[in-house]
Length: 324
Image (cartoon, rainbow, N blue to C red):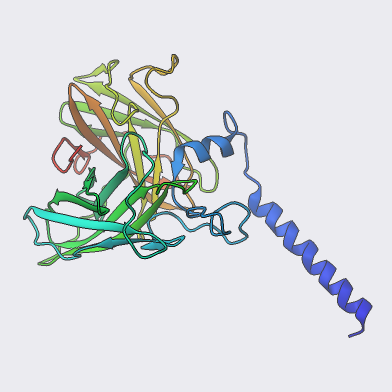
C-alpha cells in the first residue's frame, strides 16, 4: 500500500471513530435543567473513578465508564475489609479501611451528605438492604456492629471521597455468611410499596442511557405526609442496584431542606441514570416522626410500566437493619 493510500485509510478510520462517538454521546430527549449537569450533581455511580490529577479520573476518557460498586479497587484506592466471613444472625464488630495509592488507610475524607462514608450492605438476591454509617479511628479503620441476618453471599458498598479527590466514588467487596443459602425471589414490579403504616407510590420510569425523573410520594394511613424530616441533609435518599451484578447507583433528590423551594413531602423527586436495560431494585430511605424507614421497589429499565397493585412482600422495612 503506497503512502497516500495509507493516509486515506487512516483518515477514514478517524472519521468512523468520531461518528461512532457522536452517536454514543447523543442523549435522546430533553431533560429539565440540563440533564447532564443534574446527573453529575445528584448521581454517584462511581463510573469514572476518582480524579487524582494524573489522568486516572473520568473527564475526557475514551473508555466507557464502569458502573459503581463493581470494583474493589479504583483509581488507586482499595476497599479492604478485615474479614469477609461473618456468622449469620450474629452481631459482629465489622472493620474495614479504604487504602490509598500508597497502600496505607486513608484518614482524611470530604463529608458527603453529613457523613464521611456511607456503607451499604445487601444480600446478592437483593434482600436484607442496610444503609449504615460506621465510625473511623485516627488510623483510618472504620468499624460498625454488623449483622448479616441470613446465610448467603452479600455485597458491601462504600460511598467515599478522600480529601484531595475531586469526586466521590463507590467501591464494593463481597462478604459471606456461611450456611444453607436459600435465595429469595425478586419481588414483582409494583408502583406502591408498604412499610409500617406508610405507603410510598412510585411514578416515572427508568430509561437506560438518559436522565430519568422519578417521583416518590409518601402517605401514612391514607393521608399525604407533608412534614418529612431532613435525613442526611435531604428529605430522601435513593439507591438503585442492577439485578445480576449489583451495579450500584446512588442518587439524591431534586432540592434540599431550607432551599426555599423544596417542600417536606409528600413528593420527593429524583433524577437518575441507569447504564443499561435490565431489572433494578430501588431502596428509598425517608425519615418521619423520628424514624428512618426504607421503601423498596423492583423496576424494569427500558421495559413496560409497573402494575398498579401494592407490594405484598419485601416492600420495605423500618429501622431494623439501619445504623443511622
